[in-house]
Image 1: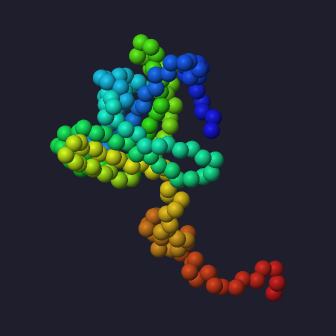
Image 2: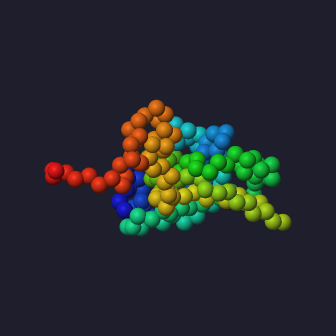
Length: 186
């Protein structure tokens, strides 16, 4: 799939020495969390991004020519236990998350504009806690996953009343559903 790349980004891709970075933005109950795969704070897109370094992990991001509901995962390792509990308490299924792939200049500046690699909604967080490390992994699913969900709304008077109380647009649907209507003949 072709992407809209800025000329500077496309030129940097042709260089022998690439400096790739990952930007992650995840929304939680208390607000967004913005991390990047470097160290320290960095500014991009009018926001401040905290460096997670090698502690930030990213699952596979796949693109296919078919319409497929794919997903990915974002993980953080080496987190203090109180922050893990906070992350679990703040995680809400369905909140958005995005991942961008970017490139840095030799001086450490961001080459405009990083490419959006994945956008989806939070599915489930998972904690792996062993003697050596503590890791939280949050799965994100594409919005296409909704295609597999059955809709509970029907073309009935009751469904219409639940959405728009007082609207009588579907009032006679039940009365005419099995009625045979002859058009143009007496």
